[in-house]
Image 1: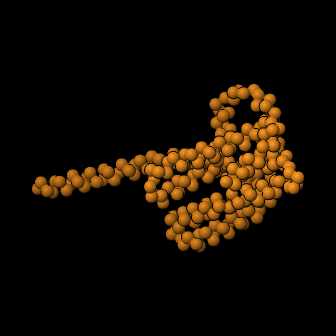
Image 2: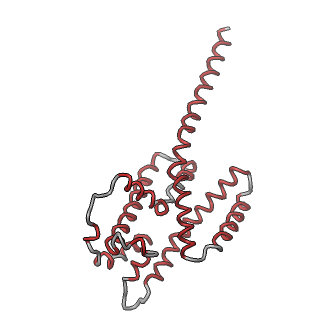
Image 3: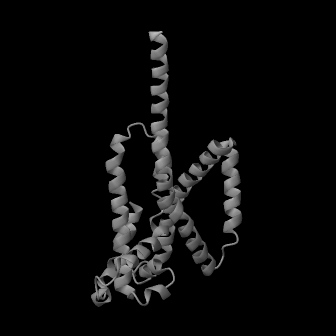
Length: 225
């Protein structure tokens, strides 16, 4: 609901869009489109948490439709905000604008609110905190499964390490640099690593079937004897 409200507040930048900023259209090559899709990695990260949550779901067949609809809705919001930013700033000026989406809200003013961007930041924190809590649980549970540590101890350890790293990220340049590194690592984890695991999963499914068929064959031989 909060993200929907934030999207609705962009009505003023939509009114100020210069539609000539979208021209010329359909000029990019497939390689350029793929590079552009890779550049949005940080924006779309988060869906990989579904891989972690999947084993805990009872009725997995009913999960497909809401998952696909949720990813489709998120992709639509990202596409909408991207089109608004390009139409408002132009494709040439957009790379030189820091915090371009937040700057869009500075063009919105109300008689009773002077700085709407401050309210947007507070509302966005309310969106980010639950996602970070879920991510913290995934990391602590993963550490428990891999190394056998207590989940609470793992959570405190990860929190201390995270706070230590965040304390060194102070300037805007450091934030952007850390964002780029997270996007690079996240690309391999979210888009490449699942395809590496896919043949391993198929082999694991086939291997028990072969072992069970061998056991049945050995058991049948003893019965005949």
